[in-house]
Length: 214
Length: 214
Image (cartoon, rainbow over all chains, first blue to last red; front, top):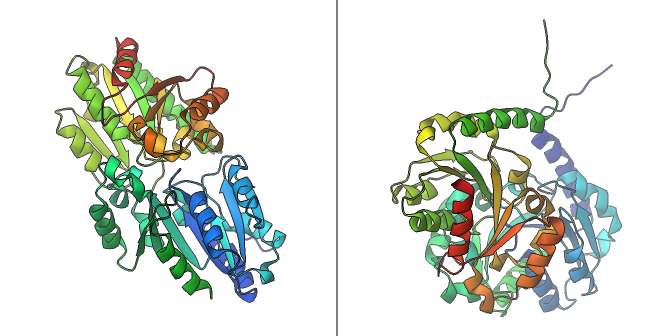
């Protein structure tokens, strides 16, 4: 008898994530894992992105939430294939959850699969899902002290979308410090300043996303 | 030999929390565990509270963060005894962390011990610290869909402080829905609408807090 003890939950997750990545690569679908604290605007960014791309890139969306289907309903209204994962209390998505729903998509027909993680600035950063790229959001209203308090997500992400910049006149947030501290943690971080509400800065984000997926 | 297997990390935590509670009760200090997502204004609320109470209630503060000492420095400036816990990656405080720092305070000289948890709307709600009461914040800028997506923290808390109401004219947030959904999860929840920036609504919060501690 051979007994295999999985001693490290993160190692076990990484093995499943590597399997997911292989399947995504074979289907030639680019996969992004979008993370942020609660209410930073992940779903709003996905909605904006779908509208701006206007069918030019074929998109699928996986929505991760502890409970509820609000976000998936928002995406479904836009005519995009979407699956809602409810973690039932779990504070992050893991690779196995993605493995279990990936067959619900016609992966070979997609160019881009967007995974919206559970709203949590901490735990999701530790769990690879098999994505090509991690992208994080930070709302201006969260304040400029966040990068140094939650360093891992900034270090793991390839891009930072600073959202809700329309609120700049009404908060004490120092956007210069936000960017400086983010880049000190991750000098390669690509930073976008956007407002999903007004549309400001969205075109730069869309151009960059297109350049990745093509 | 007797072998004791701790099968449930939450059970183990609850045992330590019960011990903490006993020590706090004997010292006659009222303990609150303040929780929220990142950037909802926990430290700002504590600062405001300290200033408004103006020495009338003797306060100590435990600051919980993954990294950094920003928050403890803000509290120390107000002349209040404060200890910073850095979890080093951990997404919540647990009872043992509180046990390890509680002796740094002259507990018998305090009326109120405020514990500021790690900014996370999920995991902290599962871990009792030995507090008398859990209090949560939600920033208006996080949007009105949060209660139904993160139900546990709303169910575990005795009070909800809706902060940043000065941003109401500049967001799409429906404060009526926020309150309705929060109360549907927890009909006994005491709800305060405040702005730690402008001071709006703070006096109601202070009066309530005084009534608990006296």
